[in-house]
Picture (cartoon, rainbow, N blue to C red):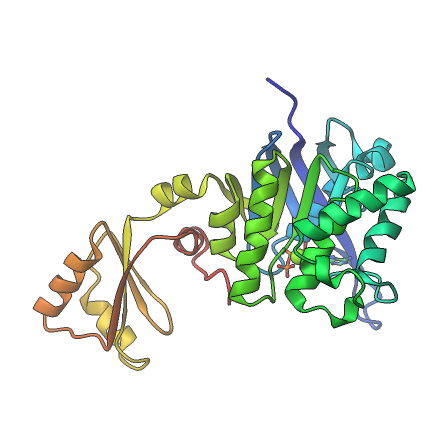
Length: 319
Ligand SMILES: Nc1ncnc2c1ncn2[C@@H]1O[C@H](COP(=O)(O)OP(=O)(O)OP(=O)(O)O)[C@@H](O)[C@H]1O
Ligand SMILES: [Mg+2]
């Protein structure tokens, strides 16, 4: 078996949090609570979970910028506690918040960053031009970073992370806050990297992003792994083939829910809609209307990772 690019075993990170001034007590907050997974070379692996699940904290430990509290961790075969600089020199990092240099122009951001890695000037210049093309920012080379759109800034951050030809690219929420078109452009770029064999670790709270980008993923909640598998595996394991979504109006949903519990394999009542899990959504809708229940809106769709998350935690991914 080739060595995994990332291996975590019972990884824990706890923070000391100060109580109020009056209390003067500090307590431990466990942000990552015994996480174990492995990522193979060339894989695109996701950490999918809601706000506060511990995704960024996990990523910072893997990126060798935050030390673990306990457990085992190797990145590119090395322990970050001992080999931080060696690991960091082989990583590309796209943090959750863009940290581009606003004082510098677009191309200069790449040049300066490349020189941090001690790469020769001519090589960095060549690589910067390749990456501007890759990020579709050639005509913005001389623009101020501040004048870029959100999607362009994100692409520049990714281009910058690639300047050292990293073996592993860490992407923390690559498309949060972007509009649908900008997200698709970004996914396309990341997909190309994946095709070229770059190992990707992606955190996201978007199930569609996880489905688009990840070969395998872990669903995390409150610092713990709830499930692991490919998107298709997880959906097969934790959901039905289809979902019927119906709305009866906010005041009616709860009352109707009591009358349709026998439909499908499972029924979830959310504040704004009712979900009926079944292999055939249309069939369930027919049964519903035959019973004299006529929803205001109805929609049949394929199960998604959102349904997996709901099943595992009883909550929605985006609250
Ligand atoms: N330096 C810190 N000190 C104390 N608590 C922290 C610190 N950093 C993170 N936390 C807490 O740890 C938990 C996990 O945070 P983390 O940023 O890893 O979550 P996340 O999954 O990345 O969430 P998001 O989707 O919002 O980015 C949160 O409750 C957060 O408040
Ligand atoms: Mg985060």
